[in-house]
Length: 313
Image (cartoon, rainbow, N blue to C red; front, side, top):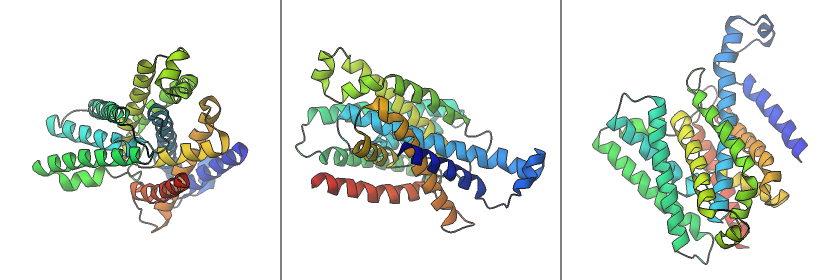
């Protein structure tokens, strides 16, 4: 299965590079110059890198949150993290319009981290008998944050533009405006290095403490990793839901829960899912493009429903 997934990833990458509004003569690339080379290096390769990094990063976020909350239906879209990052980005645009990308990312990071910590405190305080109630509470929590953001945008007359640039979209990715996504690479490395501790974290606070894992520190590190990933994703490509929910659940069904073994598969599968969604967005009404937030939301929403039905059975 991993070999098939790897082959599928390579094929999807090649198809992604081949698809575009502007025709590209592949034989012209051999000269390492001209319009074809410029199109490849300035547009299609950056877009491919952005899609892969986003898919891997969001999948990792889902794994970490699911281990901390101990619920398989939790990810940034179902815990308020994405909505909080959007709110933070909106606040930064209103309070400091001239602020650079790094400053806006910090605003989104702080809001996402605070909202995730509050959500964790809520679900730890309320003991739900039905595990499906945990993401439902997260969706309600995210809706409140989203409503606050929209009201804030309405008060400052930027509601229409906010809805446009916060919906996940890779069409504007070109060389020079996506490189902040490479911050997800060290996050992926740290997640893998702490894979054993995150696995123990999923056993509960008492078990983690008895095994010598500092629950509060490890959970705080996990929330920080998630917040950084969500912040750089939102500020670069907007909000993309359900990737971090679907992929970890599918991988657990076939490979188990030991993160040291499954994290590479989660990363690869997350990249493949987002590549598929991106290709659907680009080809469905070609030469026009559907925002990937809608495509990923539709595909992920259907898979999310199937996972809930399977869980209830």
